[in-house]
Amino acid sequence: MQNDIQEVLISEEELQAKIKELGQKLSSEYEGRDPLVICVLKGAFIFMADLVKNITVPIELDFMAVSSYGASTKSSGVVKIIKDLDQSVEGRDVLIVEDIIDSGLTLSYLIKLLEDRKAKTVSVVTLFDKPSGRTVELTADYTGFVIPDAFIVGYGLDYAEHYRNLPYIGILKPEIYSS
Ligand SMILES: O=P(O)(O)OC[C@H]1O[C@H](OP(=O)(O)OP(=O)(O)O)[C@H](O)[C@@H]1O
Ligand SMILES: [Mg+2]
Image (spheres, protein in one colour):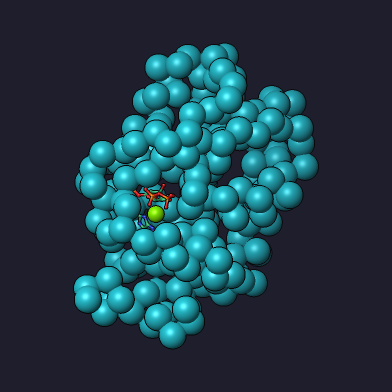
């Protein structure tokens, strides 16, 4: 697995320091608001777990699974809901937790869906932002790292369902996905 990585882009320590910082900002933003914090599976599962441990005010959690990449490094353009939320977002302050914004298609679809379901507010925290990939305009309210134009894996992010368990963020060798 490690042999497929061209370069470690962000270390475990750098990830944890940034997540602590994000947790502090979110704790002051959501003080007294009891937000519904939504994890976008599968990619965001590790970020969600580390982030909520750094939020010090009351929150509720829910999970949604969506997929648009499959075994490719390019979005299919079709966002498929694999698992929906368990609870209503109507009248709630909602915080979407994403691992990465690339084309922006997943989040623009999700934001519209939650607004249509009458959430009171919809905000986004993303650990990674890859602006070079954008096909629709979208900016997160909170961003961990802006990353270069490369396919990254690890810390929840996959290529063809592998590499999610790497504890750091690596750039995959292009020969892995072009062969
Ligand atoms: O901005 P976009 O181009 O839409 O890309 C970002 C989305 O793509 C990935 O999910 P994916 O569809 O690969 O599902 P996964 O989370 O199960 O890996 C990632 O976890 C984001 O949710
Ligand atoms: Mg994926």
